[in-house]
Image 1 (spheres, one colour):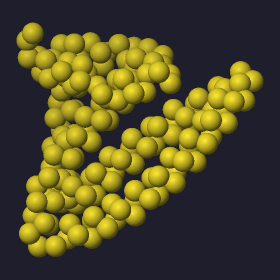
Image 2 (cartoon, rainbow, N blue to C red):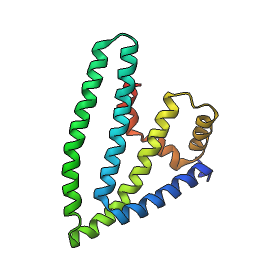
Image 3 (cartoon, rainbow, N blue to C red):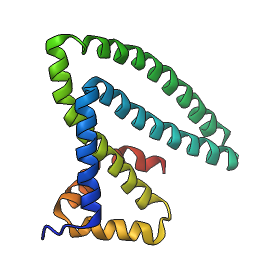
Length: 162
């Protein structure tokens, strides 16, 4: 596999640099909170689609289960937010603040990986036309992007719902 540099790789690297810088500035605690928020939003979106399609198919049982799961997700996320806000307060302590900033770099890059994984899930499961085809062409041309695509952990969790 050749290492072809294409526009998607340049975009990915630019996003990684931007998010790493921002992660350094705001710290790991804030980046983890944002990453969890992104995953929760995706999960609620999937549950909402499941609820709507269940009710449209007159499958009330699955629709109600999806709505209950949305409510439970909201409650768990709220409780998790309380814990993470406490963590952000502790992360402001002098020595911990330094490590929080350094680890924020990794969390920022991880956030870009999750965003790309979500993009790949959308391309795999919804009609994206020539846009999706071009993204996949660029992905297959580059070893790093292909590794990112093949290591999509979210896809395995979400695919059964789509």
